[in-house]
Image (tube, rainbow, N blue to C red; front, side, top):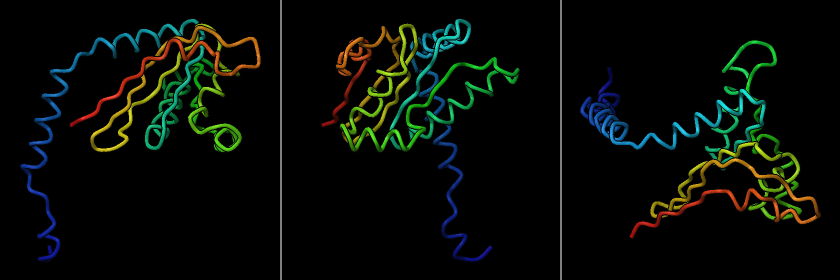
Length: 167
């Protein structure tokens, strides 16, 4: 090993410290929301309701990966996976909606067309800055509008959102 390579090696304490912090976080976590989401997804699978996933940036990639796992990986029997759609997966739709409307509406506009009562939306958490984090949780959709007003889609009345600001 060269002297330069040895200089950039990370001490083993870094990894054991990370593992200990991760263990502590996992042991102290309240798993109730995760259990509720798992139950809801299982119910969607059994009743053939649709699941919508969304997120921005890395969360968009995670939504698409999870959609693959739910569609195929959960059951490799032909046609037996979860009815799932990753809303960030179609760049043509995303750029159209962002250009013609507003970027903030790229997911709600898709849900207004595709979402049905009883379907489930699973959204993501993202860090806006080091001191600001936004969170959006999952909720069952209550149905779409039967008029031209996209903004009346009932998902807006049923989404859980939160923001953390550190001082």
